[in-house]
Length: 235
Image 1 (cartoon, rainbow, N blue to C red):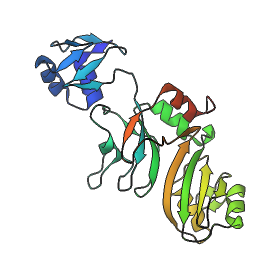
Image 2: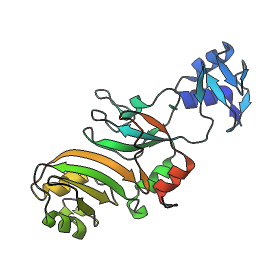
Image 3: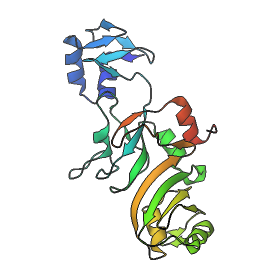
């Protein structure tokens, strides 16, 4: 059980002072009842609303975002828009961060959470959680590229783990990685003199980007989807 003002502040992004003001002003309800006491104790199963918007009472938050171009994978940036700006107020809470990064011009599946242990489990190379991408390059996809990806391409920071390249068109393919180095796919294709012109993450583990999630939008992940990401269940 936690104090209501702490829950409101931590899980809505407003200051503790503003949370107390909202509570005393009758703008907060718990299980349908207006609560005016900041030290009122609430649990994970209580329904909390701030000015009509539901506040999550869960210990941790797990969000899937369909990332558009033009946003950087950071919690804050003084000059550029960050992916956290796409999280609506009803889902936002202090401490959330993008689990892994997608380049500013890369689109698709991104996980945002406040659970550091979960992020480590899905990102650590030794965990082998596969990430699949749709790729477009400026040269025809060749068998040599497919073989090179499978055998492991040597980059400046070492040899990449074996990756799967599946040709889907003359200039398009799907690439599945089990590690996440800086600009890895772009650097791998660069070894063949090719430039990546479009990059879109399709899936992580057994979880694919929902087809009904519009670009730039996000929603909470279900327990089953979290298990799919970690490979605990098969889709």
